Length: 310
Image (tube, rainbow, N blue to C red; front, side, top):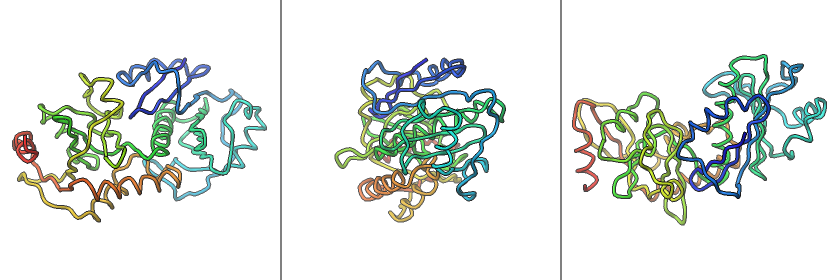
């Protein structure tokens, strides 16, 4: 089974092969609003189980220190993966390899990604921990890499839109992104956890994303999915007893965005991380930046509307 996605105007084709077809309807539902009928493709991913006879990875981790979200994530040596694929007869079914091909392990899943073609392959071991936890994580890592190669990313933030202007609220888990999204009912929500950020023609734009915790995308038109809206403010969330905004330095904002608020940043390729470095360097030089101190017991929506000139 195959689904075709459009994320920030980037067209991605995903093929579920063999018994992984059983989970395709779940992803079809999950990506409701981002399914497209476009014939062309910018990137493609294939998902499959490995044969029953294979129940362990034969290669070792490249860097034990490369960990995030879980200590069971790692990158592995390219040449070891190539040799193993040849031994099990999977080379012809796989993507072309080069020195820049990424190979990442998570639990019982392996992601292969080719930056030259934006093609990817996910293999899942049948006899391992959390079949579909692996698939879910590596699935999003692949999408993050495809976006990153084009200089955009999933940002750990809430994105609220009003009058075709985007307001971004970066925050760690529990910082209040979903609370802000829920309380600001007169704003349109692009995502409460992972909107897509992209710079085009010198303008930083935000796009709707399937990466969210609340069902927030109702009423968003397909044209908005492809074009996004300009970002006019960044508000870094700070829980407080009072509600007010305060200036944040460009240096501090840049550091926080790059080290804390880009989804999957540590798992991305070096070239992709450099592109995101440039993206947020530009963001911090062109978009007003503030801390937003807030209390959910205060009238957040009215305050923001007043601050944003609405």
